[in-house]
Length: 337
Ligand SMILES: NC(=O)c1ccc[n+]([C@@H]2O[C@H](COP(=O)([O-])OP(=O)(O)OC[C@H]3O[C@@H](n4cnc5c(N)ncnc54)[C@H](OP(=O)(O)O)[C@@H]3O)[C@@H](O)[C@H]2O)c1
Image (cartoon, rainbow, N blue to C red; front, side):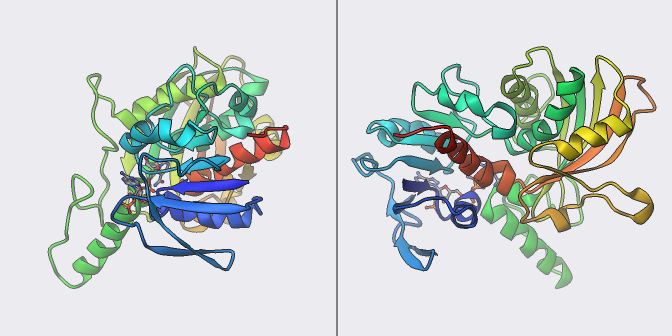
């Protein structure tokens, strides 16, 4: 495969380099793209040095089979035609096309086959908090339809990009030195704090991030009636998002049944032994591929309810890994440019 990474210098772009290598993705040629800011920068992949090219409206994508794009929504919109016009498949990490009818929104463990219905040559990678949640919802939904989901997220600084992660590290260092922390990427100081505000607010009082979880879950799971109410919170964690989830199913699901289907669920690992202090935590999940689930229990406030805790590395499964898995799924099912 001839592969391009657009946004190579970013948090997700850098993860693409690691994931493509870890996954032994078949690569003949690799081309890295960025803005003027990172053009000329060099990165090493499988022992070879690559120089970032400036993304421009030209024919640079001519021989490309798959373009992994993570350079923000406005860049995706501006360059989609340039990227796809010679037949390259664009797997896009931004939110620009996710809800478009002619763009599939894919999590391979849930709806991999949707990837083959991409008339514009664009496949959207879902929002990171939604990806890890639907991986956990799918096996439960297969045994009893989920009617309602309440979810509170605990989102890492790196979810807002490489510079946001650097800002949290810098704030911690500044506070230790007794200095006033620099606040640029978030609305407030994140170190020693929580911010109940991820992305911008919409008219109904929810944020865009929260509405992504509402809308994208329906599309990925092909469940237009599933209701998702989310409260998204930024926390001073560097990497890996956590989510407290409460679901209501049509028929009651016991803890034992839930544990059994979670254990068999694709892309899931159960860590759930509270008496031994075993539950998933971002510190230990950062850098790992699967979505981890624990604290599985009946919801004592709802007889058809279950509650659990999930943690996933949002730069991996929530972004780069999921995108690479989409390409792997398609190749395994016969896709060729
Ligand atoms: N971080 C996450 O956990 C996460 C998870 C899921 C999805 N995403 C999505 O992935 C995308 C990238 O996120 P990130 O966290 O990696 O952000 P980031 O660390 O801020 O990186 C942004 C990247 O986009 C590039 N870029 C910006 N404008 C460009 C342009 N006009 N032309 C070419 N390249 C351009 C930047 O290149 P320069 O260095 O040249 O500016 C940089 O490589 C966003 O759409 C984000 O919503 C992020």
